[in-house]
Each structure stands twice: as structure tokens, then as C-alpha cells.
Image (tube, rainbow, N blue to C red; front, side, top):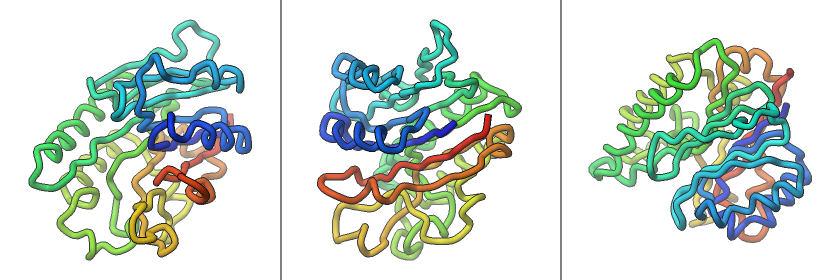
Length: 255
């Protein structure tokens, strides 16, 4: 089973690119973030015509998360969402016997900003949500835009980012607490080398200069990690006209 997570940075603006990528790659499950649309506007029919069931939790021009799947469990509640936050940042489904959670962690903005404190509280809520819907022995994938680079190896220049969000000790500790519950960063396990990034700023030619961060993660339980045969970050999806500033992250899991 091929699973992907992708912050599409406005599904309205990038639906043709998302359709083309899905048609080309043929993932079984896609977790999306920053759809930036209401539930009513979500193109469920478009994905249905492509062979995918979908669930979406949106709030308009901000945030928004979705799961599209062509390996549902054939249950009426297979794409039932579980929202832990009113800002449309988390949705849960069961797809092909694997519980998947699509998350869009708050950015944090600045270390002295209230939004940063909200980010830390939200990470606590995420851990509580994961604990409520699964156990460490389940087949579970928590994927999405975490807005945290787990370690210095996950950023292009730690010194340039010192004192900013995404790399601060408190948010990294919250992420580690989630992993300590029973999740593994399987992409980093399979790709231990530096310069493995999933996000590049639109400004200053960051993508071409290699000024990126790995903030889009696939955190999985042992049952999934031990059966992950392949993983990758699709840099090609960051190229071309009007791309998202994030690239899809993929894992292939034997079933």
C-alpha cells in the first residue's frame, strides 16, 4: 500500500496539479493539508471519478485537512473524521486496515507569539488524540505538515534559523514525546543522510539553492515501520508552474 502526505497549499489553486500527480503516482491513500476550502467546496466528486473516497475537514480560506483513499475498509464509517481542534487541523480515517491521521500543526509564527504557545498546546492535544484512537501496537500512520524540523540535520542551516520556530527545543520535545508514545520517523530511518527536505520557501530561490527543511513527516507505529519497504520525498512535485511550497512524502507498506 502506497501512502502519501502533501501540504497542497490551496487545493482550489492546485487541483489540476494534485490530480495529475495522483494519476501519475497512483497512491492508495493521500493525506492532504492546507486545502483552504470549506467542506462544501471540497471536490469530492472529482476524486470519486478518479476512484478515491474522501473525507475533508475545512474552514474556508485557512487550514483544512483531507484524506482520499481507494483502499477503504468497506464500512459505512471508514472515513469518519475525528476532530480535536476547531481550526480544521486534524482528521482520522481507516484505510486498508491502517488507521491514518492527517495533521496540520500550527506554524507558531515566533517564539514570543501567542500562536507559538497555541502550537505547543496543540501538540499536546495531538498526542492525546492519537492515544484516544489507537495503541502503539496498532497499524497507525500520523502524517502531515508538522511545522517542526525534528533535528538540525533536517534544516539547511541551523545557525540561520536559530531563535525561530520550527527548530526550537520546546516544540522538538513535544514531537519527541509523540514519538516516545510509540511512533517512528520511518523516512529518516531509511534516509539518514542530510539535505533531505520537504519544504522550501518561495522566496530567494530557496528551492534551487537547497535552502529547505524537512517538516512534513510520516510517523508510524512499529507494525507499519517494520513493513515499510520504500520511502521518498517527491521533489519533482515542487517544480514547474505555481507549485506548492511543500513536496509529497511517500511510504510503501507491505500488507
